[in-house]
Length: 236
Image (cartoon, rainbow, N blue to C red; front, side):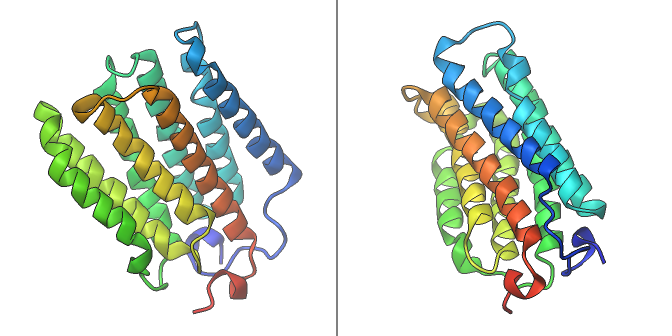
């Protein structure tokens, strides 16, 4: 039974091979390089650099998880890469709708994958309470400020919250995946805050740093989860 198809892993040997470690390290280096170069923007080719870490994480998920789960996770990171291109190439606003659609695919793909990995486990809703409370605040305060984009922004927020709730089910205790999902929620919400409600200084640097940290922790958390023995992954 493969990792993507049930509670037990396909193999007990470590999933993070030398090649997988190289993919992860390269993604981190490229992501940090992009963040370090944000103060220099605009500069030619930044839109080519930004999606590379997500594409490498997509390849890492494809290698780590077998079956449908690996494909969903790879799709999620691939869609995130597309969203990164749209945001950077469109200078944050020019291709915002396309970026919103791409990141919506990212959220849905992660939601499906996390639902599969968490199948049969407790819901652990207490872990999701911070995300639920924060999302309700955004629904009341931010979404009405989105104007004509209010319906898609509301849908996106609902999918983002659902993704976080599903992520809370996967780990037996709040670890890297949980933290990464929370940071992802915060980063994506700050895009809306900066665009529709309350622009703030150094928004791009703050948002991209949170976003990259969240995506990185999700990838690392998933890989570490996949390496655990079944009894260690979920004591229930």
